[in-house]
Image 1 (cartoon, rainbow, N blue to C red):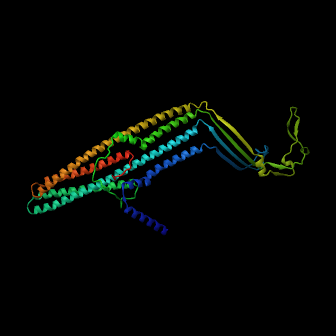
Image 2: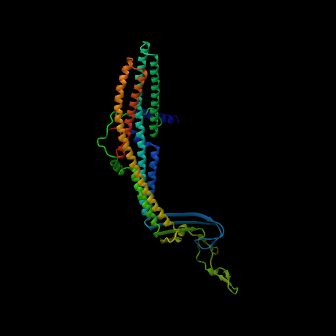
Image 3: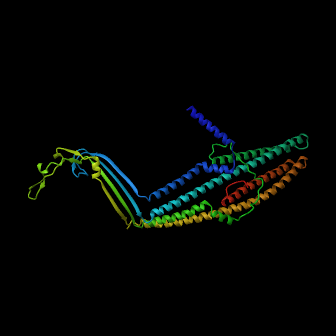
Length: 480
């Protein structure tokens, strides 16, 4: 047991070391989740279940074969099925039976069931693809959220450092009598505010890491590190496509659309199955059986039945007795139970039958199933139409958001440039006492706000354009 625990500890430690040393790219995160996420694994089981259902429907086309065997004993008076005589002593019996049935035609229901199961399996695969796409998008959003808060953290740290330097300069100016102590108190209050802001950003960053790690089903965030791609420049796509063009591409590639289309075809096969129940079914069946009875005896055939006293079996209408001369095994001096092999051969029976089933009236069940199948087709078509409309709305919204995000980012860049120059000017004026700390803090707040808006606009645009690429069938990546 000590060796086992030691081996487990070594293995676990090596896994943690490997885990801690890895730098995760977005592609790494997506690949890992699609391979190890429990929800994804459960979705994959639905595909295996569909494959088994399809296999069973194909094998159902073959004739069945069933066997039966029994071994038992009987006490008391009963008619033995192999001797057709009363048996009163304990009798051993064995029965063996084989049967088979094959349906030659039943309104093509078996063929339609196979085709329906194939379509259902294909629909399930598309549904799993849709689920995996949703997982991938969730991971991409969580990944970008980490990058977003990571950049905000760096900005907050830089602003805090600037404010700390200003506090140090203000102290010297207060001690020199150049500025009033109230100016120092205002700068120190700004420093405390920025320290709180940094803590909030760091908390959000930690939560973002936790969100991504939980999506990956990893044990903890300790040692987890992601790659930070170069996203310093944001520009519009070189070959921009309109929302309608993106929709047409997505219409032919999105798994949710394909799943809905296949569901329509499956519902049509359900109608064919329901209609097939109106057709007569035709098939064959056969059986083979044999058995053994301990009451079956081999007698000495040399005895004349007229040498034994007659047995009275009844009376005539005039009350005259009716005698019969017959031998029972107790009348013989020598008798033995018939051999097992001989009885198996002698008692063998075979049968073959042609079966024809003609449905006449079943309480309107088949007609009702046909009507329900037609309703199912209409419902599947409505689902397909709704899925297409939903896809169009999502792409139109994503496209509009991407265009708006790009405009916002461009405007935010200009605002950062303007507020940076304004703050530098205010910083110079504050250092020579031309403005007070209130005006200085306002200028710094505007710069911090502009920088945060720029970062938010940048990552908002990156996510929106990545979403559009995803709808066009491109892999999720931040490398451009």
